Length: 248
Image (cartoon, rainbow, N blue to C red; front, side, top):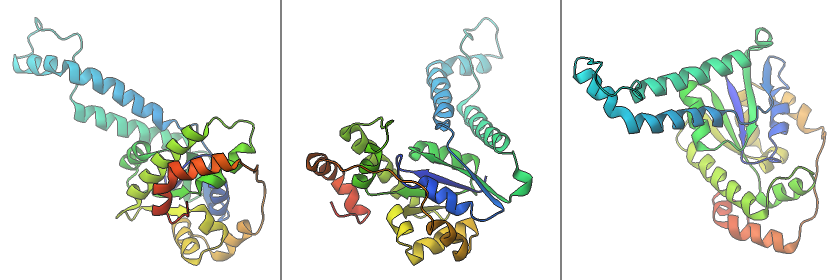
């Protein structure tokens, strides 16, 4: 896996960035996979909880010369083996799942929404050399776009909570890490030179390839929102917005 795009929420521009990256013929960035990394984390957490509770059984068994007359019903290997199994499983799953057409491409990845620090960290533990584009967008504009969709699953409050958490995670993840970059959707569509240069370097794209996509708008959805909702989002997200240089 070479490049992945992680978006702070739905309607943040991840499909646009996917299209931009795929403008290069030897790049294949696949779409969303329903956040399946969360399931790998759940497996780890489930076993780890039991492992912590019953680790005394493993220790007692192997310090007592593997005496079979010892309580061993919930004995499991140590935590380092669980972590190794987790990383191996993630690596094998994604390499196999995304192997279709890989003989035609030398840059392969996917885009996903709503991944936070835990999921992204796990993925890069399995793929330490993979580049990660962390995509954010002004929360008010995201909410306007979400309202244009019938499937919007959020309330203003739940949306603001998720945006705050993931945007904060993305800023932290992007600090002092050469394989992660933080990108604002607004800087893509305004064709900010530094932003497009960074995207071009990660995706091995020419400016001509980038503009081929940016100059053609495919779809959008937006609805006006009430002043009350806008004020609430700005109030709930204001602190993080300022850190991202958005005006509350």
